[in-house]
Length: 635
Image (tube, rainbow, N blue to C red; front, side, top):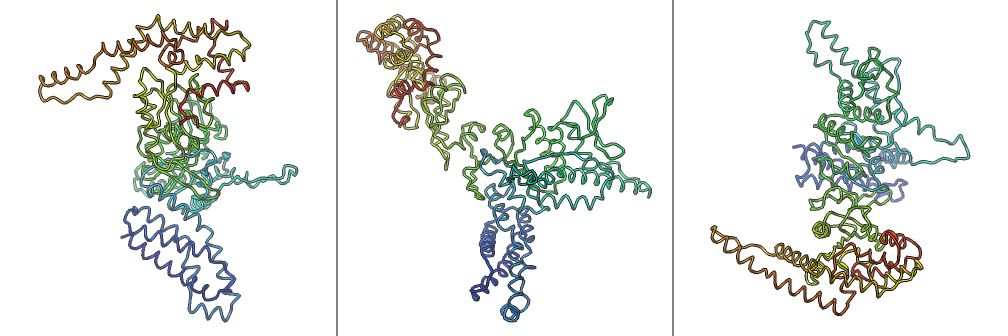
C-alpha cells in the first residue's frame, strides 16, 4: 500500500515539475536555469519505476518519501491560476519567485547520490560494510549522505572529531536541546579548507568552533532528556500514581551503562548536579569527564550518537575504528548493534580487520570519480578469506599469489622481480592455486590474479595443466635454486669482486645430488603418488567386498617400482651428462647455497644476494633471475 501511495505522490510531483519545464520551453528567453528541475524529474521517474519492481522494502520507501517531501516541490512550484498570464503581467516577480524556488533545491544531487548508494546496498535491508582505500571518497560520500538525510530517518557520524567535553551551569530545555541537535545533524562537517599561513587572522576558527561544539549538542540532549524523564517520574509520584521505576531509565543512563561495560578499570556516572564524572573502581578518586582519554571520550560520543538516533534509523558511520584500540572496537559496535537492533548500520572503512569482523553485507568502492561518483560492488562469496579479498579488490596492480609469509625472503625476492604486481603470500601451494582461480572468477575487478608455485617434484605435463588457470612455476626446483643459476653466481661474484670457479661449484652440486640420489628419487615418487591420489577418484562400491575390490584396482594403477626406476634413470643421465641447468631444475635441497659460500669464502650467501639485488648494481642479477620465470609473468 505504501508503494502505491508513494507512486501516486511522486507522479503528482513530476506533474508539477513538468508544467514548469513546459513553461520554460514556451518562453525560451526566460532567465531561469531549470537543469536541476530536469535532473529531479529524471530521478523521480527512475524512482517510480523502481517502486513498481516490488523489490524496495516499505521502510526504505518511507525514508525516500521523507526526502522527497523535504524538497517541498508543491510549496515551491504549485501554480495558482495561469502562470503565463501572471508572467505577462509581472514578469520580474515570476522570474524572482522561480529562481528563488530553484535555489532551494540545493539538496537534489545529494538525495540522488544517497538513493543510488542505498540501492547499490540492496536498499539497506541488512547491516553493511563499505570498504575503500584512502582517497576513494568515503568522507565525501558521508558528507553527501549527511546533506540528503532527513533527521527522521537516520544519522551520519563523521570521521572528523574534535571532541571537547563541556560543563553545564544549567541543563537546557529538552525540546530546545533536541531541536538544536537535529539541526546540527544536517551540518556537513567538511575540513577540506585552507588558509593563508602568512596571515594569522586567516585561520578558520569557525571550523574549529563548529567541530568543538559537537559534544555540547550531544551531551545537552542526553542530559535534558534524563532530566525530563526524572521530572515526569516525580510528577507521577506526587500524583500518587505509583509509577514503575523502569521509566526512570533514560538514554543517558543507557549510554553510561554501555560505557561501563566496555571500560573495566573505571566507572562513569552522572552526579547530583548533572555533571558527567568518573571514578576509579574503589570510588575513592573522582574526576571530571573532560579529563578522559581520547579513546574514552570517543566511545562516549559514539554511544550517545547511536542511542539518540530515531527509531528504525539508518546509521552511517565514517571510519568506525578511528581513535579506538583494536581490543575494544569490535565490542563497542557489537554492543551498539545489539542495543539498536531496530536500526541498520552502514560502516565506511578502510580497516580490513574491522570489515571482516562484521556480520554484515560487504561491499567495496571499486572506483571514485571526483567529486561525487562512486562505483560500489558487492563482495560475493569466495574461497578467499574476506580480509584478504577486501585488500586485493582495491588493487590497481596485477596480483601474484605465492607460498610463504609476508616479509619472508621468498616474498622479498618476488617483490623485487615483479614491482608491478601486488605480491600476496598465502599458506600453501593449494591456496595459491585455489585463490588464483577464485579471484579471477569475480566479475568487474580492477586486476588479474596469477599464481607462482614451487615445482615440488611435479612433471612439466602436470605444471602445464595449471597454466590454464594462470598458475605458473619457474625453471628451478624451488625458489632458493634461483641463486644457483650459473649466470647469476658469476654476476654476483663479479659484484663482490670475488674469484669464482663456476665449474667447481657446478661439480659439487652435481656430486651432492649423486650422493643424495636415493632420497631425491624417493621424494619424487612420494610426490607422484600424492598427485595420483589428488587427481583420481576411487569408484564407489555397493558392498564391503566391492569397496575392497575397487580399492585394490585403484592401488594397482600405482606402479611404485616403475616410477622409481624411471626417475633414477633420468637422474643418472643428468649426472653423467653433467647437465647442471636441469640438475637445479629437479634437485630440492635448501642447503645447496653452502656450496657457494664455501667456494666464495663468504657467509650468509642468501642475505648478501638480497642486498645485491636491492643495490643499483643488482639490475643485471634481476634480469638473469627473470629468465627462469614464464613470459606470461615477466611480459
